[in-house]
Image 1 (cartoon, one colour):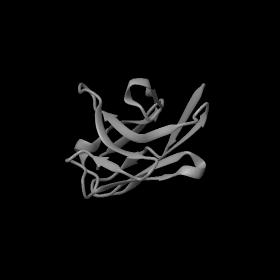
Image 2 (cartoon, rainbow, N blue to C red; image 1 turned 180 degrees about the vertical axis):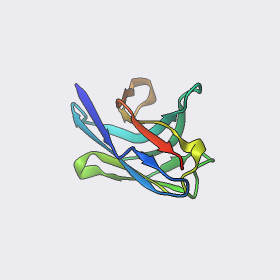
Image 3 (tube, helix red, strand yellow; image 1 turned 135 degrees about the vertical axis):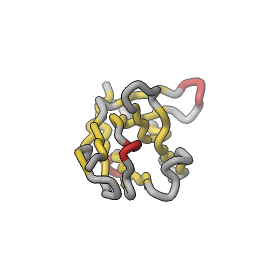
Image 4 (spheres, rainbow, N blue to C red; image 1 turned 90 degrees about the vertical axis):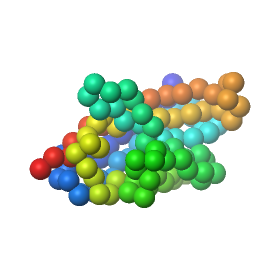
Length: 120
């Protein structure tokens, strides 16, 4: 069993910053990557950023330069530092965990989501 516990989401003013955290526990041997996705009301879930256990990162173009993903492998935790937040960044942010190096055998897990609201 895998547990993903997210924290850090809250109401913030435009231009502000937030740091999201996600800690993984349970049967998580062989982590390939962790990341963040988001889903705004009425929209599909979309990639925000991912990071592999060797540090390779991938960002959505819309957040590149403002958001930074990082990880603490020893604690199986991934962070998302979000700067220059905009109202359109309002969404539920979901932690994502991928286990398994080979794509054909990779398993994906999701956190319960944390609400980020950017509003004045």
